[in-house]
Length: 375
Image (cartoon, rainbow, N blue to C red; front, side):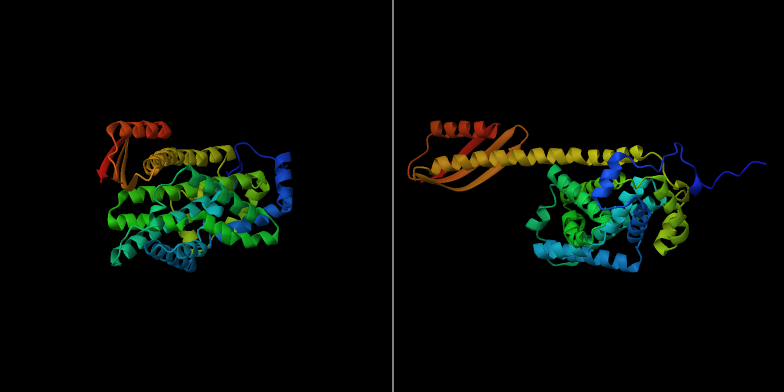
């Protein structure tokens, strides 16, 4: 008589791993103040915080979204920061990082669903608030979240690393850093801007803000995942603890619904840590492409504006003229700049061409200069 095959949650690994940690994992674990037998407890703590998505979680999440939206519309930086502090998304994101590190498919499904539904809910709430309010001005706080660059991705990477280090470290004094990590993560304001863009029909704002949210999401998850892998959270002992925890603890209302979805229970414990790392890295790489393009455009605008500032200084150098205003159009084939100048003596066309040539050399691209002169 043959033994029955194990159920999906108990499926054996394709390539059984040893519970013996590598030298790198031992060094990283000790530097974090984590003992090898603390790993199952660390999983349980992180997982329990990540799946605590009952009514209070959703209430606080939507309240933070409302606070962020009002702060953006009123251009109140302090209010936007307060919304970041209130937002409870960091727990599910770190739980998703943990799930991907150890290969826990059910925890990954639960946390990913919480983040996705929460993001959609905040966007819808922000759109509704924007639509009913009597003012819909585009404030600097809104504009700051519509053109993300690779620098924003770098901020997300460092924020994710900070959050994972605080989670892994057994040093209690680091728990005071959690509010700072929540501010650095900055997940809720981009969603508020996306809702504003939907309500006002500014689809470029929607694209930019959702790209920023995706960059933050990817940066946090991949750095959290790598940190958990570095301290050996993918070892078989932790994975066995994950299986036992699911049997005992996954009975919450939201978690039960997610686990009940077709195919989720069969996820069990996913295989190949490297495959999971590559999957998340591919997402981050895909997000970084438009971010790099945006950064190049920002740097180009900075060069052009710097060159035009030098041109303005040259015009005003001898107190003969003063630049009243300037209108700049940056296009694919160069930049057209129109300066309105009050002058005591006409600036000749030869002088204009010299200014144009100097500005073009400083900007590294053609600048076509037009002067509207007023005596």
